[in-house]
Length: 176
Image 1: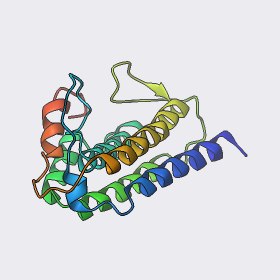
Image 2: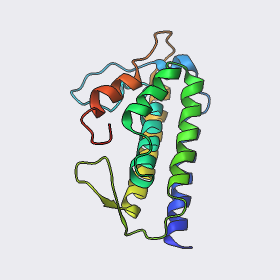
Image 3: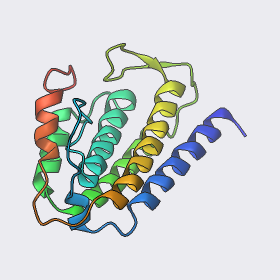
């Protein structure tokens, strides 16, 4: 097995674990949040819904920024999310399509050492590192979602806008 094949397998496995963590989550459960007792910004409002859209946005953004010459910008992603928020089913579809976009963006990579632009402060990174970090990101959030599934109940209170989070925290990005 080549390193590229291994990274593709790892990406699909991590996304499969993420998908399993979301199975059976209802809209009311997805919208629920645990009380925030800490100072940390979690890149979301702390809901399963927010986490799913955080992951989706990352896949769309990194697929575009790192491997497609920034054909989509953060503002485009915010607009896309705003068009369907707060629908849980639409969020899941957006996540699935984001993963497909992500995988297609690097499907033809042959040089894992080639440097690619990122949205990270440190700038360009080798392809292998971007791919590995993104798979690890899926796995990290899959575990977070599993814990939240057992810690939250149902709510009919609509979640905070993930699109608004992107507008707040990504406007300074050169990829805005």
